[in-house]
Structures are given as C-alpha cells and as structure tokens.
Image (cartoon, rainbow, N blue to C red; front, side, top):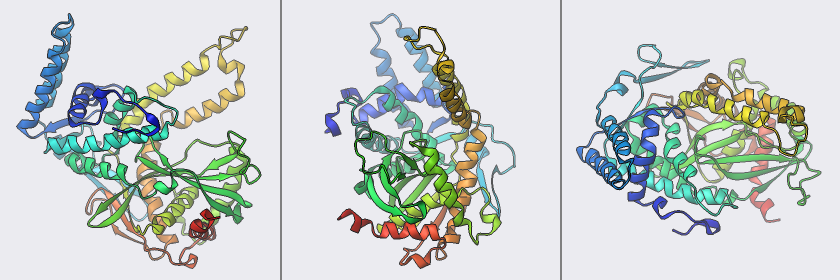
Length: 469
C-alpha cells in the first residue's frame, strides 16, 4: 500500500479483510459493547456463519497466548465477549423511532412518547459485506490520516481504534437495522473526490460587505468523531495581512464548517450534510468576527420570525457558499440527518474526560517556574479564556444534541426562503431518517434572496477566473 508523505503502517494494521476483522473483533468490539468512555450498543449477527467466523478469530487469538501465564485471563475475557455476541435481542423493534416535523419545531420521540432506555442493537444480516465496506472506508481513512498529518511518519493504534469505534456515531436509527448499507455509503463518501481541487486552500475573492477582507475555501479533513469525513472550511483573512506569507498564523476567522459526504444514488450525486458547526480555529478572531456579526443579520431581512428561531445566520451564510460550490459540480440534491442514535450518550460520557483534561492542564506546574505556581495562576487571562471554552462543551450534551437535530433541520428548511425554487422532497421518516431537499442550480444572483448571499454567489461564480490570475 503506497501512502502519502512516505508514511508507514504496521503490517498487522494494513487494510486487508483479515486484519480488519481481527482488529475490530479483538481490539474494539468489547469497547463498543461495554466501555465507560464510549456509547454502548449491541450487535446481532443473524448468520450462523458469522458467529462461527467470529468464534474462530477469538479462538485463534486465545491460542496465541498458550505459552503465557495469563492465558486463562485472556480466555475468560474473550469467552464472555463471545457470549454477548451470541445473545439475541429484539430491542430495536421495541424502540422504533419516529420523528415529527411541525411548522415551528421538530420533536424526537418514540412511538409511546417515552424516553428511550434500551441499548440500541445493530443488526448485521451479511457479515461479509459489513466487514468489506468497513475495510474500504478504513483504507481511505489511512490515506487521509497522512494527508492531514503531513509531519507524521507512522499510522498509530489510536487512529486505528478511533476509526473502528467512532464511525458509528454517524448512524441514524435505520442504519442500525441495515449497517451494511450504512458502511457502503460511508465508504463511497470517504472515497469521493468531487472537491479534491480545494484540498489546498483556494482564494475565493474579496467581499465588499466585509470591507474587502479576503475569503478562502479549503476542503478539509474531519476527525473520526465528527459527523462526516470531509469538511468545507470558509476562512476570512484580514486583508492587511493575507499576502504576508512570513506570518505563521495570519489574522483570520473561520465560518462554521460544513461537514459533508457525497455519494451516488440512481445515477445522481447526493450531498449528505452531517453538521454545520463552529470550528475554534482563528487568529485575531474578535476583530474579524465582530465584522461578520455586524453583517450576518442582513440575511434575516424579510424573513418571518418563525424561520429565524434557532437558526444562526452564520450557518446560513456558510451553507449558502457550500451550495454554490455544489451547484458548480451540478449537485442539487441534499440530505440532512434528523438524529444520531449514539450522539447524546457520547457527549454525556465525554464530560468526565473533558473535566480531567482541563484540570490536569491548568493545575500542573511548569518545571521552570521557580515559584511553583500552577499554570492557572501564572497565566490567569489564558486560564479564564480556556475555562470559558471548556464550559461551552462541559455538560452540554442536551444542547449539542439539539444543535445537531432540531436546529440543523430548521437551518436546512430555512434555505427555502433564500432559494425560492428549492423544495423539500421528503421529511424525516417519510422514506428514511433524513430531510431531503432539492435546490435547482442557480443561474443568476437574482434567484437568491439576501444581499450577502448574492455577493458570495458572485464570488463563487468567478472562482475559476480568479484561479487563472
């Protein structure tokens, strides 16, 4: 396997079917079932052949310790794992999810209007397809790791385990009943090259409404815990410093990133938008962010109050730019997930890690500090800033879940106010767990409502001309 940047990977972690099945079953399956750090769910492998396949892998792994004193401990541990795999359940049927979209709000509930309490179950009907699509996605993940980490020479266990344990955070309720299709779709999206031309940051233009500060776009690589493999990053640079390449961190502000994946269905490309989220990646942020904030509310002009509620204008701006880029590729179909089954539990369990990490960082003493002061006393202003950022994430699982479900769907629906020819072709639960939107290619800025959005449209239209300069 040829890797970018002359990267290396251990033979046992190469993306072969044998390696992927062994690593997933031996290294990750137990964590998914019962870890205190990950959201837990069960697996129901419906084929007897699948159980025999897993049993054989576990047996061979146990036998590899036959000459070690702790073989009995290994045997007990993995025999318990096998027992869990062999247990059958119908909990998915008891907890069938229904998502209802109202005129002003979106609510998530189960059929009995009761809080979901049972552990989700992933029903695997074809284990060979399951592991093969997982392998395909993993292979491309390794390549993207070296593309993202240009300074890294080796693929590590942490990245391997993160992939096998966190890809499931993107699963919707229906994906748990058809994980083979879920993984097939993930594999297609991670291999898609639609926007590879923007893998290096690309100059978009100067925006008049932002005092001619410079706008750039970049097809970034998201992390395994994010909602998609790729993310479109739209960065605004201070015009006074943009051309100063000697600065290691030119003053800039990044709009909310669009985490996306593109796949093909019935001969048409479809863009799945997993999330629209603020990315803490800026320098001189306050100055540029204030300029953006002074302009962002212009897009609310003539918009009904019900379509402003819980919709962040900067998300609309970023999403509109992304739609313009999709249109340049002839992509007009968009889908937005209505919920992620494991997301709430993931963020709830993450609280413990966030707190531990924050305390360790700010109570430690730098070895060169002769007075022995903890870091938070030595750098009080930095501490207060870090504490503020920490509190934005700590115990915010309810808010994060709302942002990724209700608010995201409301943001998607709001597009109809700015693209009059757009229409919702299916609401969540009509055909699947997604809202489906069709936005015909815009031929002229006059077909968009919102002055700021029109200006961004014109920048994108001139993109090819600018790149030739």
